[in-house]
Amino acid sequence: EIRGLIISRFFTNRDLVSLIVKNFIPDFIENLSDEQASFLSFFIDARPELFDMDTALLMKACLSSHSIINEKALEFAKQLGLTTSFSIGLMESNFPTAVDTAKEYFNSLDTASNDYVNDLLVLCDSPHEQTRLFGLELIEKNKERIPLAQIFLQLKENRHNNIRRFLANELAQQPTITPESMDFDIGILRSRNNQRTTKELIKNRLENQLTNVNQRISEDLIKSLRELSLGLIPRDKEWAIKQLTELRLRGIKIPEMEIEKIEEVKNEISSIL
Image (cartoon, rainbow, N blue to C red):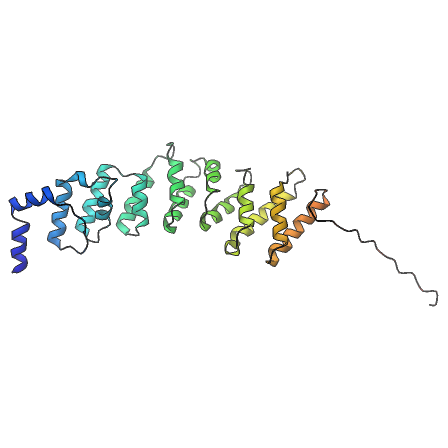
């Protein structure tokens, strides 16, 4: 009975509703009753200027736990025109309906547009792992239609482990797609042991490249190999020493490294026997 009186007082009184719409700015929109949620849904249409794409209020409404509110807000956002930054927020929310809306937005983008590469890079740079994985999924899906070399060059600066692992794997399969990847390779060689899979991919690719006598060997690479050879991780240390030795045998100068020739000594047969 009390609830019915409240509903009658606030939500069916036209004069009071008009006054609320004029002066009300919603802030807390969680744990609402169905009547409150219905009013807020109505309020979005009544005061659309408060639910601009650049305001926090629209995002709050889109991520509301009440289906009446989030469905209305997500539809309203689509009518306004979703943006990459807003859709990233939806993706990072882990809210299933919002994530589906964001994926729908990104899947609808024109891969030939000037902004598409940046959209992919923003996804891959997200602190949210599932958002980064979706970015990689889009790269894989559209690799025949996007400038992979440009994207890989940009991803070299990425510091997330799963992105680095993806890039190392791609470069292992297509080593000539980004010839200027040495800074990325050296960064991985110097990384800690928590990027082991990525480091092994880089080591295998570098070892194949270093066997090419025409391959120019940068001083920074030699320096990083020296650091590994003095390190504490046995597999990296042995690998680095092997690479440095082979480079030295090719006549490449390695600081503080000399290869001694060991002469074979023939044992003379004793005359006593």
